[in-house]
Image (cartoon, rainbow, N blue to C red; front, side, top):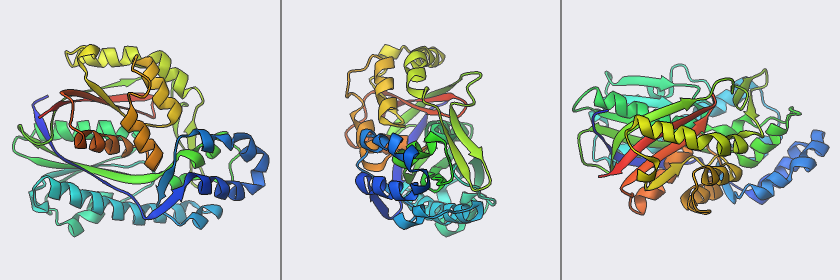
Amino acid sequence: MPTCSLRSVATAVPPHLAEQGVAKEIGRRAFRGRASLFERLSGVFDNAEIATRRLVAPLEWYEQPHGWAERNAMYLAASEAMYEDAARKAIAAAGLAPEQIDGVVTVSTTGIATPSLEARVGPRLGLRENVRRVPVFGLGCAGGVSGLALTARLAASDPGSNWLFVTVETCSISIRLDSDDPAAIVATALFGDGAAAAVVSTGDGGLARLRNSAEKLWPDTLGIMGWRVEDPGLGVVFDRAIPPFIEENLAPAIDGMCREMDIARQDIDRFCCHPGGAKVVAAIETALDLNQGELNLEREVLRDFGNMSAPTVLFVLDRLLSGGLPERVLMTAFGPGFTCAGLLLEAA
């Protein structure tokens, strides 16, 4: 695709901090009706390599049952606040005024917003009335990479334009106390909430060049990751096969993406990956023959914030940019489908 520049990256988190040990004890109380299930799986809290997470609700909120309407009301209020925070910081860091933004891509999958989030927040941000809006639902954890890639393609199709990308997820409101699915316990141990934003413009300059993108969708994998839409709220779909699936299938998928981008895997100086969990990070390192611990920033973000779904990889990118972007970086993230999204960045 034509060259686009990444002008800025910004992140935002909600106000409530949860230390992992405290979250485990709250989970034990919250799942008291399913005590045997919780105790059988409680070790996931200790093995997740997560120290803290940020949540959209006070900790006691998660000990009570909530229906769809109440959960979605929490999603809207929290998402609007984080959206505005991340977007304001990204626009300012890009050296732009809100009225200079020509288009907005919004990625979010943890709630329903109609009108969409950018329509709700745009007037407060100062975006123009004729700003082009592209809300995207259903990408899950892959949305940070595929959403940024979509933003770059839209900017490239309109020379001279500035596009804002925002992804916001409130994974924690999906915690379900009524489920006998082990995935509900795993989600309680992993999920955090957060948002990230970026500004993309045509031409050179900025923090990095966005060079190309690619995706891989594996057939017959719908049950590996996603949401079930049920009466009390969204029910998480996490298959235990995710890490071994990644170990077996990631390398040929990345090699295929690299061929589409006319590079070799060996040309990539650093992978920037969505840290879905400690086992997922280890599986990526194994699959791509990386040195153990090479994805150190991914582990740091997981430790500090947990799995925030789509925004998480942009938290990793933010830290990578702060330390100096290597010459060639491939961002990757897995999501429902089962999908792997890739986006190639080059140092400016």
